[in-house]
Length: 149
Image 1 (spheres, rainbow, N blue to C red):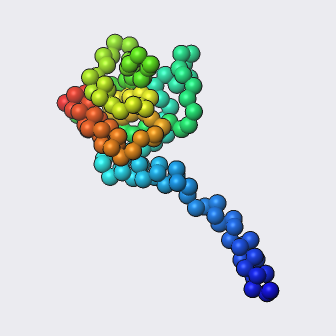
Image 2: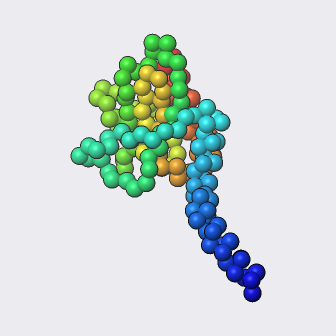
């Protein structure tokens, strides 16, 4: 009988620690971010292009920016330029900026893309897997070559 009481007391003492065990979804996101970092991308929270405007669509979940740092050497955009994925295709959020052909090669689920003097990247909600990150890396490499060289 005393063993049962000890077991119950230990279980009650350890129960709050189960809160710190990552869920399956949290482990998947951590794996995606680590995979992106190993492949030369950085990850940060950013609002997507068109966020907060009257015609932006409300989206659920967190939007994450996967970016590629570039050394512009004076080339590339002077300020941030951005594009948003719409229901009919890509839409330039910055006036007078063409839509790069590389954006058409991005996987489904990408919310937008942007480029600034230091980086270019995409906005998404991490709904894919490692194969999509490979494709994103390929597209961002090509986009960086086009914009910054």
